[in-house]
Image 1 (cartoon, rainbow, N blue to C red):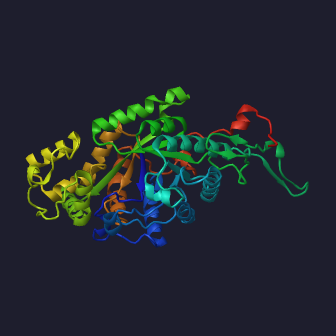
Image 2: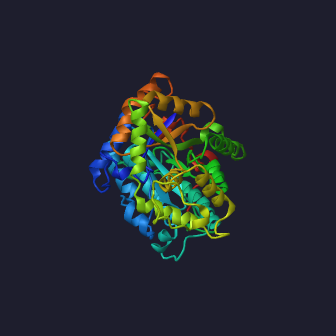
Length: 441
């Protein structure tokens, strides 16, 4: 199976957890985490990104959105690692293809072939306002732009054939110009002449990763992706997503093994099941109350701040105006009230709904990962820790050895590049493959 270390705890209480590091401005923190992941022979170290601080008062007050720019950080981490893949988020909405192609090619050269690009279209208006827009682009337009963006980047990576650089001091010939190709792309969203002023990346193409499960995302991942990060809500949902992604590949002339489906999983490990449960309960208790109440008000339009958090929900008739909610949200509240759920229990459950969570002993965690891997839910996992750096240490020291013993995970890296770790072929230069002629632009 594929195992990635996700540089996000994905839990709103994690930065308060004892031993957790809430300060994300020190390089020593990232160095410790990536070296732990590499010690465990994990495939990738993944750094997510957003291009704004949310305007939402509770989000700004209670959550940490301080982060380093991914590709500057990953370039530095390349110097203190040797084998692990280095994946970073780069938005196709708020960048240009030439910038992206050059950054990723540079990281691939710096790391010796370990770069990966998490392709995103960005998600919120706050990002748009940092780039001269009053609001975020509409979903369909974002994905159409992203589709063309990725194609342009891939074309730029093929500007130079692999053996284009002669570097003959005696003759004075640096490059064979017949092996230089000018893209000359003119499309709906971009006009990019090229060529790229960087050699072809060691991997040919750095690994391309998508995140999401929308129809547009699934199509783009099937066409151009090497992996996709997903967040299924249940085992049945995971199986359906897995099959949906894989079934799309044939129309693009691709095989099932060419796209890896990687659900995110929050793993909480204890030496006993009771210890693991206690960790999980402590983590949940650390969700700031102001953030939880704000989440409920945003979702249901109800201000619960005057009610005791640890007593059953007040009756809907006392808090909800007629026709205030759609049926789906109303059904959630009715079910919560009937079950005797507390206000704290309601917001905790809602804020964890997007995460798969495995809580237990190392053996129980390994069993659950094996079950999901072998039953058509995943090709591997994006491992999220309850706190960093210690939570990842627990996974690497206690769970990975069990997976190795079962023959489910490597004991040594397969080769120097990320593509070799993931079992992916190195793409052939499109011009060399087609015997295409040099373009003078």
